[in-house]
Amino acid sequence: MIILPAIDLYKGQVVRLVQGDYSRMTIYSLEPVQKALEFKKCGATHLHIVDLYGAREGKCTATENVKEICRSTGLSCEIGGGIRTAEDIEKYLECGADRVIIGTKAITAPEFLKEIIKEYGSRISVGVDARNGKVAINGWLETTETDSYEFTVQLKKLGVKNVIYTDISKDGALGGANTDCYSRLCETGINITASGGVSSYPDIEKLKKAGCYGAIIGKAIYTGYIEIGKAIETANAD
Image (cartoon, rainbow, N blue to C red; front, side, top):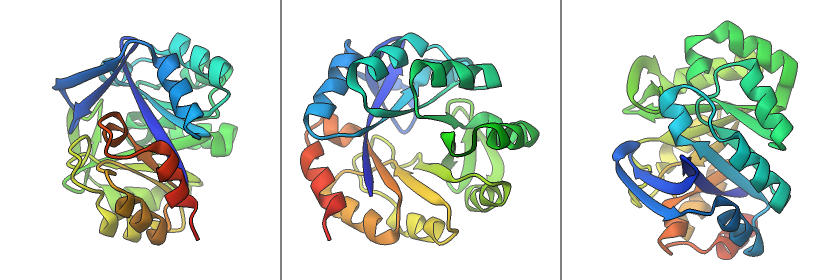
């Protein structure tokens, strides 16, 4: 299982929110490249980046940050937040990102999703952000009536290879991951990356046992609950 430390960007700053609440924002660093290099030094090979400002505004605003992170670290980076057009996708791929994450547009414009999956294949991941079992969009500010599990099943039928599934109620709360939910999702056969609440080594062990492709770790790293090196060892243990 792949461990992806998270860098959430807001106007170029490394921040964390609690349960997607922009009023509950903590700034951890003014130097995202330096933070990414710290993760690499600890053994990270992958990085999960979210442009929170872009997610809220509905446009990509972190191209320069992503370009510098990719150029300086050589990490395998995925980026999401505010990506709404094929041009946005191209911008981030040109910046050096290996994968681009589509969230809101995946549910509001299924034809668009079909087109980009056909064009970019596995370089597209879909972010399924769930609040009480329903898909949330627009930077988690709006909750739809779409069932998050059923939506994931439909994504697999459309040819999506990778889904990043976030349980919003767990995000930034350090309360543990919803492993029962991930076990069920992994049974669909799609590559599931768990996000939200991963805050202990037993969480990592459970997610690996559930069959998760990857686990994104955010606040637990920044607050010292988890060390990246040990997290990677746990994820790779037999």
